[in-house]
Image 1 (cartoon, rainbow, N blue to C red):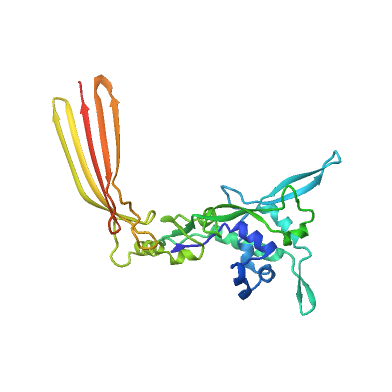
Image 2: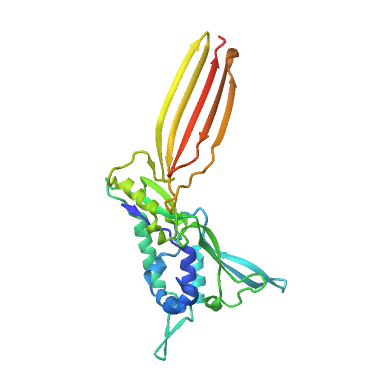
Length: 330
């Protein structure tokens, strides 16, 4: 079994959609698709949008919030603009008030479309069922999720200069998103919140739907399903194939002095999305030396050098040379 979606929700997008609708295209292309406001009127009665709201019982590392700049009258008689933050359990009441007078005009008749508390109750029950679900014994679970894109997490309406004076105005205000890492729709934290013990979890740079066309994804699936001729050296996390090509080790001891030499070589195979090699065209050299004084005047030193050779045809040669000397004065 492989999981590609979420259990903890897409909090930023869900709240914005309930208040302001959703548009999947920009510019002139919007003329060929359903309008943002019409999408809003459809989704407000759609159970799935309520299920995608931030789960109030999930133990968030970073709690998603609904923020409002509000003007409040203090006890001194003066008004002050403050930023109010509402976590998932408290933001529901704000959504209810904002959508209290929401209506749909159909054939000259106005139909009320408020925030649907009954659907929210069903959605919460669904989340409870999903959060308590267990996999049958013998079923392995794998998790793939999208990364490297700014993803709405929390949402803010108004600002210090123009605070929100009436919650009913939220439907017509443009929100500001606080973003985190994700696939542009679902944050990484949500995408990993399945509650299962996964055999492996791998993040792939890519967009929510576009990730399904990523070559990296198909290489991972082939590796996990053992389709074709599996490569035992393939690493699905970094999408590399590391082939050991040589290994030599020698050790000599004489008069309390131990000298050990090591030589190891690998080939790293990795292509970018365009099929072109992403390895460098210049040799690089790195080295490190360490020493340690032991008891009874014993002493050890080690030196290692790594050569990274220029890449060719998607392959890059790595060479490691190491030498250690230990002196036992006892």
